[in-house]
Image (cartoon, rainbow, N blue to C red):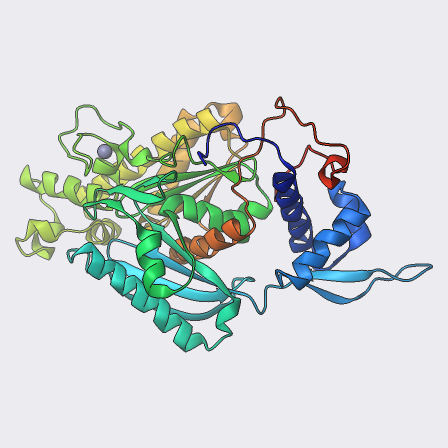
Amino acid sequence: MKRNLPQPVDSAFIKKANKVTVLQAIRESDSISRPTIAHKTGLSLPTVTRIVKSLINEDGLVVNTGVENARRGRPPDRLKFNGENNYVIGVDLGYTHIYGVLSNLNAKIISELRIPTQIRSDKMVVLKRVAEVVKYLIRQADVNRSRIFGVGVAVGGLIDKERNILKRNDDFNWDDVEISRILESWADLPVHFDNVTRVMALGELWYGIGRQYKNFICVNAGHGIGAGFIIDGRPFYGSIGMAGQIGCMMADPRSTLRCACGNYGCLAAIASGYGIAQAARQRLDAGDESSLRAQCEGDMGGITAEMVAHAANEGDQVARDVFFQAALNIGVSIASLIDIFGPQAVVIGGGLTLAGEMLFQPIRDAVNQRSLKQMAANVQILPATFGMKSAVMGALALILNDLLHLDIPIPGKRQSQEFPADTEAAKEPADISLAM
Ligand SMILES: [Zn+2]
């Protein structure tokens, strides 16, 4: 099925969507009764009762917690999201490290492991390492394996959602990798993967700022730079899943710094982790004096963004210039995104955020100066809720998102919404919302 073709509105779709709506209502409160869910969602009480029954008996995602105080009649049972005894595994497959966690659905981490990626190895060797991490996490956690819903993997690069492959990762130098198929054959669990920054955005949606904001942008500023968009409470994929490559937005047409994509002057080429390193190298090549020269002991290739940030903190002028220029460029690009999307918040994560205000202050200044002031006044610039754990938290959310079919396409309102009169779906409101 092609994701972006208009979807027929069928009763199975409505049922799935209503199930999500009910589960979200339960998840959003500490405990809730069936009548309150019906009131909150606009669904009929019999429909709510039927859905709750399957959430309790078949999915094991909801539990009864006791009775509600009611003035008369039999008090209705209270229901609660069952995050405790259900588990997911999240893996951040990064350029330098593979970081995995096994957690329950309340995001309580049960076991975790971080190992070097060894990215220069063959891709099958790298993926085997991911599978080993998954196996280790399961062994360590000692939980009921049948309650582990699956493995979510966050990875950089262009994702083709239609073919379910990693189409291209410039940093890894990988093409057309069937990550799910390969890992499933080794891990013996369902595996879902997506672009790391969109995954971070999903993590924020499920466990972070998503409880306050339905429209926000995640910016991942690490080895590379990317963006993930949450629009009206749902992740945005673009036509086949490749949206969000802000690292290749043109930032400086005169720049001689090369991007991993092959172009010159892309945002990532001058402002990502590797961009900052190569910008610093260029300044040293030009003869500028900097403590970085002594630090790298003549091996200019050994300069990292971390070294630049550290030297900048120590007062090194070249390092300060390079880092400031990078932060400013990220800020200018974010300002454009704000003007285009009108988000409530921009959440920034990734390794560069370890530099703290040295990164955030120029970004805030650029947004205030470059975004339309009416939009800048309404947007929060925030650090990622889970810091360096953002990608892995998002990978957990990736499984939940799939489990609950949160990314099923929503039929447009203009499409026909007619149902046979005798189906249950016909009695339920078609104007469903997957907002969380
Ligand atoms: Zn590029």
